[in-house]
Structure formats: structure tokens, C-alpha cells
Length: 420
Image (cartoon, rainbow, N blue to C red; front, side, top):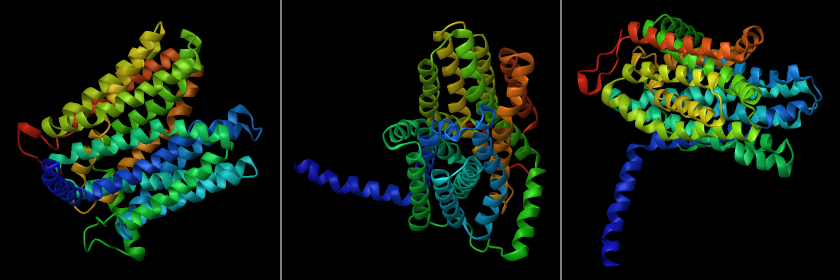
């Protein structure tokens, strides 16, 4: 007992000291994790809830598309609020919009009102995610940025991957509207935590107000969209989002059912494995990014993504389908946090919010157009050919990035040049 007594104070001091150093990371991880847990809880419910309004199947997809559109259109406003009023205000507003949007969904008397609620909720989610990455870009240095962004990615993946479990239970025993009510409460909790526990990370003196602030941020936003390194990493992440929502979430389940004859439970298990493996790979990948540089992780990850899609296209049986899931998950885990670290590296001085919101906007564009464009392509040339073409596109983007993008952090190999 004496040994335990002597060690306890030192352990407590260590934990307290660690918390003081990592306070911002702890609370931004909690905020993003709670928000994405709520999002994950309604993922399996949205199509069923939309169907309950009696709309045609063709219109059910709007419930997903309008959410992605909201995330795309809200990325820039999130950065503007973060610059004008502070990071905490942007997170607070995102949490409150999330709560409002999901409340509208829960009480919507008809499908158009439900879609409006989805748009509001998507706007709130975008503000939380964009502001979270802005905060992490504020507090990190290049030497540790990969690991920090990897923690963010791991928390994100855990929330999205684990959320459907409580969401399904809530819907089964409390009705389809209950997960939306719970997500509304979650959004409120995010807003409270952002204001109560999260320190402000915006640099002192960076505040700009009124029309002057709008003009300054707008000018910065246009400038960073013309910044070649940021544009290149944004295009790579666009490809990842495009393939994830358009291929993995839309075409792969259909192909697995039609060509391999898999049951929904088998497909669900494979996609769940994607989340688990990606989660396990996230932090080790962040270490690699900090040790060896950004490009040597980002570019090969696109190759694994392409191999995974080809594997889905030609998998002859369930074991091969699972192999494709693991290959895709490795790409998702390895490349998850690295692009965000690169985007933060190349953000021009004083333009962190503009750079990260532009990066998020380019990413979300893939979320918006991926399902529609690949769905149309699959109708013309078939799912297999569409998956292969998507794989070629992703690998090509990775190759372009490898050739044209400057390295922003060389890890053990040298200094840490900052791209101009």
C-alpha cells in the first residue's frame, strides 16, 4: 500500500501536467467525437425516415444529397465566423445549428420540411468539423501536426463507426424520430462544451469586424484557392471523398449483392471492418507523417485506395470482398490525417481559417457530386467499369500530387521548408 501511496501523487501530477499541455486537443476531440457519434447514430435511420413520408425511392437520396450540399456551402462561412468572432463562436454556432436542424427533422410534418432540417443540420456539422481543424492548425507545429490530425481522424472515425449501434437501438425501441432528438441534444452539448471548456485559439489582434472583415476573409479565401499546394491537396481529398461516398457507400454494396450474392449483414460487416481498421491505422499513420514527411504517406495511400476499388470490382467471393475492405481501410487510415496536416502546413501566415475552410470545401465537393455522378456512370457503363475508372482517377490524382506538390515537412530527412 505504501508503494501505491507514494506513486499516486506523481501519477496525478503527470496526468494534470499532460492535461494542461493538451487541453485544447482533449476538448476539441471530445467536441468532434460527440458530434460525429450523433451523426453516426442517424446514418442508418435517414433513408427509413425519408421513406416513411411515402416519397418515391428516387427522392429518398435527396435526404443524403442535401446534407452534403449543406456541408459544402457552409465551409467558407465557418472559416469567416472563426476569423471574425473566434473559433469558439464558430463551434458554438455549429452545435446550435446541428441541434436546430435535427429538431426540425424530428418534428417535420412533410418531406420538404425534413429536407430543410437536413440542410440546417448539415450546415451545423460542417461548421463543427471545419472549426475543429482550424483549431488544430492553430495549436500545432509541423513536427507533431501529423499525429495531432491523426487523433482528430481517429475520433471522427470512432464516432461515425460506432454511432449506428446506439442509433439503431434508439430507433427500434423509441421510434424513428428518437435518434434525431438525441442528436439535437448532442448538438447542444457540443455548443456548451465549445464555450465552457475550449480555450480560444485565434491569435490576438486577428479579429476583423463588419464589412472590412468580410472583405478581408473573402480576399484571403480567393487567394488560398489559387495557392497551388493547397489546391493540389484539396483535389486529392476531393477524390477521396468522391470515391468514399460515390463508390464505397453507394456502388460497392449494390455490386456485392448483385455479383457476389452477399447478404446485407455480410456487406455491413465488411464496411464495419473498414471503420475498425481505419481507426487502428490512424495514429500510426500520423507518426509516419511526422517521421518521414507528408508526401511519402499521402501519395501511396491513393494507390491503396485504387487497389481497394479494383478489388471490390473483381472480388469473386466474400473472402476477397473482405480483403478489398481491408485494403481500402488501410488507405483510409494511412491517408486520413496526412492531407489535413499538409493543408495546415501550406496555409499562408494569418490565413489559417481561410485555408482550412477552403480545404474542407474542396473535400465536401466530392461528397456532393460523388454519389450522383458515379450513379449515372454506373447506369451507362456498369458498376464494375465505374469502380475501375474511379480507381484510375484516384491513383492519377495521387501521382499528380507526388509530381507537382512541394514537400512541406521532411521529418528525419531534413529541414521543414514552408511552401510559398
